[in-house]
Amino acid sequence: MKIKEIGARSIITESGLPDSDFVINPYIGCMHGCIYCYARFMKRFTDHPEPWGKFVDVKINAAKLIPKNADKYKEKSITISSVTDPYQGLEQKYKLMRGILKKLASLEPDLCIMTKSDLITRDIDLLKKFKNCQAGISLSTLNDNIRKELEPLAAPVARRVGAVRKLRQAGIRNFIFISPLFPEVTDYREIIEKTASFTDEFWFENLNIRASNLPNIKKWLRESHQDLIEKYDWIYSKESCYFKDLEQEITEFCEDKDLNFSIYFHHKSRNTCNT
Image (cartoon, rainbow, N blue to C red; front, top):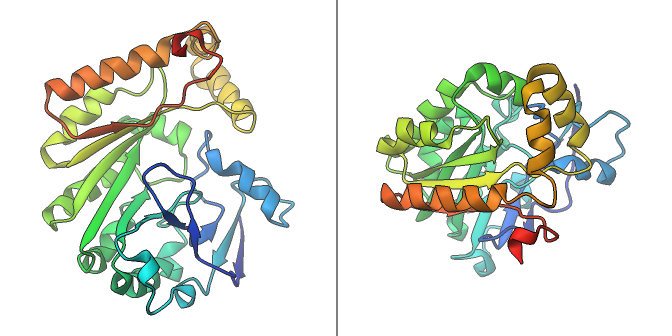
């Protein structure tokens, strides 16, 4: 893993995410090694010869780039983060998030933080300073053996679930992002049933297969789940209605249990189920 300290030109940028006005990414790259990573496109904006997942650039001046006063961010939604994990292992050393959160609180944004790490609980004292704050953990499975296949260097499942509980105990609005939802692998019902008593909201995103992550996903299927290869070929064909049907199933399940939830599924526009 190549670690490089860099000076960034800016740290708060306009967002292309739904439900978010701005994003903050303290790092470029990530150490988790997720086989499905959607942020691989970021490599072309770097000068790294190393493959994605084998380098991290640390924006060492991140906190200094946040203005002391800026009305433009008041009550605007800021998401940390969109193309990296702000609490990946390096954060334990660099503590960029503590510096960012200390300066950001006075700008009074509506803050949302997503991570795969229980390290977020280190900053509960700072999260409490925000008038509007959501903090959550993403999960694809409760099976830690499968987690090791999908996200080898991310925090174990038990620690992530424990972090969600600690956020609730601290009075911080929390969520679990069931993402990505791997067909025939992710048991969303099991995740909800285990965590609903201490989770404020559930978000859902299906596995979005792109040219950049397709080789890794095919390799994973060949090595660990050969029985699913034909199933995935069908699910991701233009004839399949799998995700439309699953979206309806999740909606009915969550409404029946009176849960707060949001679904961010990606559907292929060419799929006849969406016409």
